[in-house]
Image (cartoon, rainbow, N blue to C red; front, side, top):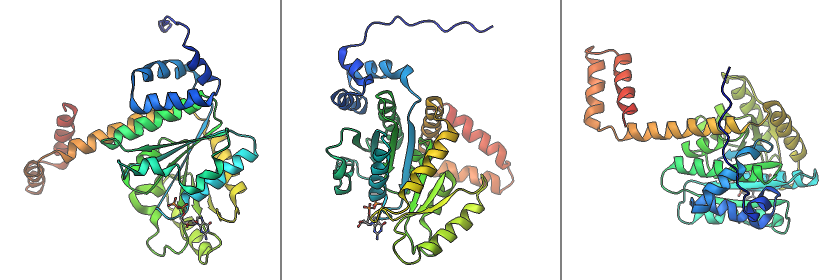
Length: 315
Ligand code: GDP
């Protein structure tokens, strides 16, 4: 039989933390700032929310800049509000550490939600390496979750490796495309198709939306994990948004959001990030020497791989 976990001594949390758990906006803002900046209060916040997680569905929107993500997220948020659900939005911009993150969430398309207490928007910019961003995003998501937000939307600006990593934290991942991308469908970049739960062709009011949807469906059919729904939306005309919200909700129910899964995905992202950075720091001469060993038959590739990974384990 397993031993019961040791009980931690609970002292009453300060009033503002109780207010946070009750969904108070000012407390929410304070808690997010704390975890974002890793201030002294952050620990108390994380302690207070630890056993209050797992209610919210986390929905990630990613896709190439210009596909209409911001407009679509805004329309989706409106649909959620019409359904009586409260929303937290985490807008993530890994590409512009200095200014972008601060501007992202305040973009004009979100201003329609500015006066709505049921919508809370927070932008995060990159600080240092990407792993830090994934971790901060996860903490902000956790705070929203504990504060009782029904749906948490994570919006990233592009389709680079970093965005994929952040998007992977979400329970339901929506990849947004625009029509007329031709052969160079942006979704295939950086393995983004592989992580999608739903593929969207936004701007369905423009020509070639139908064709792009067919191309995406064909690509999705070839996924190792099986095909995913391909939906068409026009964010500006508010078309297809209810269907998108329905599809997201259905997947959210099926996946049953789980904070442990979120934590596991975060650990996965952080481990990959660390591995990548460790590999990048491998001097070229060493990498060349290893490649040479394989080429010359001095060592087989498995042995070399084992050698590299065990070396990384020590970093
Ligand atoms: P993001 O960079 O992916 O976040 O894209 P934005 O939301 O900023 O949108 C880029 C441009 O596409 C803006 O000018 C939007 O008004 C426009 N846009 C967004 N959705 C639609 C749509 O459904 N139809 C059309 N025609 N334009 C759209």
